[in-house]
Image 1: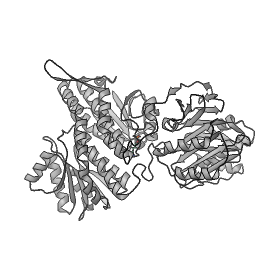
Image 2 (image 1 turned 60 degrees about the vertical axis):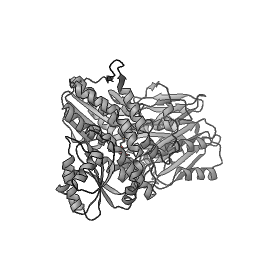
Image 3 (image 1 turned 180 degrees about the horizontal axis):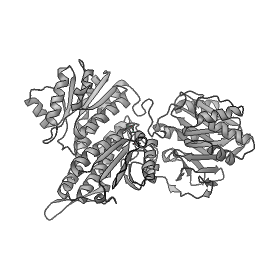
Length: 620
Ligand code: AGP
């Protein structure tokens, strides 16, 4: 989603801004721009493009010959107004230029107000009202800081913005409310600003994550003034930039997504190592597992509410199956954008679990704030430990997946399920289901091995992916904890290949969706054998679809395939290691990710940055 960078007092600021924007490309965007303030003349130079950073870089190289040391840059993910050059940021007037991430909800009122001052707007965006208002107040004699403070008092919504003034080439002002924003400093004390640490890594050695409501003035001499929401000057803590957040590298893989799919055995292992220990008792060779305490008191928890979006939501749905079946704890799972608007009942002895790769998803954050405002204990499962969600939650259970660059989430998803599996194991142990807890701990400690074996056979999906790449619609079937994986498979397919796909609980098919099936419709079925599971039920559902002309492909295990043979059913089958109902969702995530990847590869689309999508969705 929209990304911001800015530099003050840096030689060749234009280059640095372009490099910073390149680091933000992974977030997803559709237009970009840059504003520079000339040192001597105070001239503002704004260059924008409706295309990619490479186009912007070209325009800057060919159209800018100044030597500015101060400037701001932006990648825009369009919300209000199409992705055109006019709507791209920075939004500029004679006096100022501004970049913004977020949504100004009362922009229509502010437009009217500006019109009453005789100011008309050139773009269709919500952002331009902020630029025009700051500029208007500044032109009427307010200082830059006063102009920003007075404008902020008028706006409603979420924002992170950076603003430069023609008469102040020595300064950048930035502010945030809701949307994330950080200030960086390099070893020589030169300041910068960015949407996240990734934008600033390579320029800054330390970073301050601004608090919601903060306004900061960054000066070229290294002075930094920060004011909180009451306009009191405050000090915020510098933190070293995490090396992990340095500019990402494909390490020889064709795409980040492919690299991230193949990293899963090690990212799961990293995550497990943090939560569950394994030791071999030398005397009798018994495998011991040691469950590290999370600080959550499972004896005091009788209800769980899980809130998340997209892929993270599906991790929550898997956890619902696990916790209800094995720990007998009732679980509600909500998509974050719905949660706080449905006025949910609040339960005694309940915990909220908020799941997010980025930790910056606006809907998930708003839901967390809502639940905390009701006095509830909220835990966060996040992949970015410095994120807003991690900072605002009462307890944090990090995933150790490392930076995920591909917009389509893969390794973060399996790491989220790993943490949820650990939480289940800890809950079972605390609630006196010691044996089941120990069995699950042993099983989960082996999942990375099973996933490695599955990854070795992934290319076998290539012919299927080739066929799927020509499909108009694809259906995924799953039951039990594989139903969320069917939905996740369909989401991955939609995101990457732009083919319409849906995941169904296989038994639900006959209640309506079966009407969609006609000759040749591809159906991908997640159907490993499981002794007390739903294998035979899924087989019946497959038969119902096949009789109506569907083309069935089954992801299963050896035992599953043998049973299909015994029943005389001849489907294309793809084989994966034996699992249990507990570990199956993690293992079967891998082929559905890979299938979506290969299908997109056949269609020649942009795999790491699919159209219209953003890596962290920082607006509601
Ligand atoms: C997954 O492939 C998506 N791009 C998307 O659904 C994502 O999972 C969702 O936006 C939630 O993001 P978060 O985990 O960073 O909160």
